[in-house]
Length: 317
Image 1 (spheres, rainbow, N blue to C red):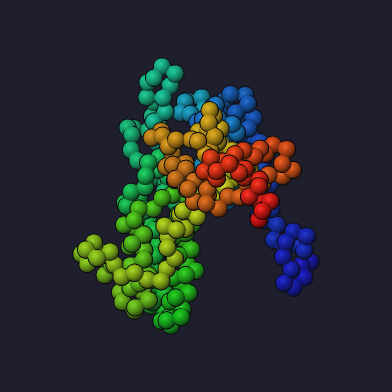
Image 2 (cartoon, rainbow, N blue to C red; image 1 turned 90 degrees about the vertical axis):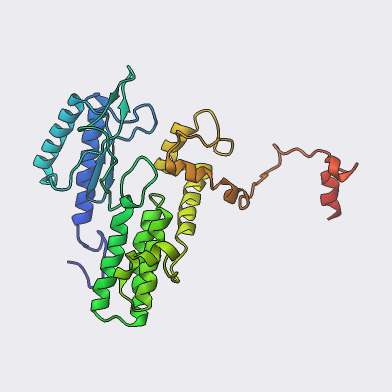
């Protein structure tokens, strides 16, 4: 059926990813039907586009206002979806993310018993409504340490250790940075693990008192803070050009009465949107505006240039 080396659906490649996509599309239709019938009320129902759930590969995040009716409707949907598709919830991985949601009367309604910080991860990245703390990102440090210890036992050469740092450890860290703002202490620990690994030392030493005093030995890993800024600039560019559901959702939520350039940073904004707004000076130095046919462009006398107009300077040049 499939020729040697051929991939893709047209060449007879593995159909499982495509079938999974079609199945999850059916789940999306079920959720949309429940939202339109008001059986499920999304968490941010007044913001367009309405987002009731997010899918990360085989991980599912449902965003709804807490109510018994909504939970029953979600339970019925998951039960019917499992019966039709054969995909069942993993009871060991599912959890409720406790967020304070305020009703019309102003009373606080919470899921579960009491309010606590979110400990869920999708996919592997901690979900938190505030700035991520060092203890929230402890799994990233554990991941880097496990990779270093496992590969050291296999006897990697120096070139192999460099490749491990560049492709695996730096790659997963950059993935995190595109989603959340990692604390500086966590980044220093990851860099220290990489530095100790390249020097052939034991990675367990990084958690000692020497790290807290000196910040660890710096390695040749990418500047992770620059990666975070680049991810924010990329998202900010979507606000300018238009396109992307996440940019459209943030614009409708935070930029209703203003524009991207004139918006002032508010304490009620999310951590991600604040980081995007702080990248505006970087964009201003690189944006080029096109006058097109000039029908909407006017030339005026500049008092700093004396009595000559701007157009005369262009003619002389």
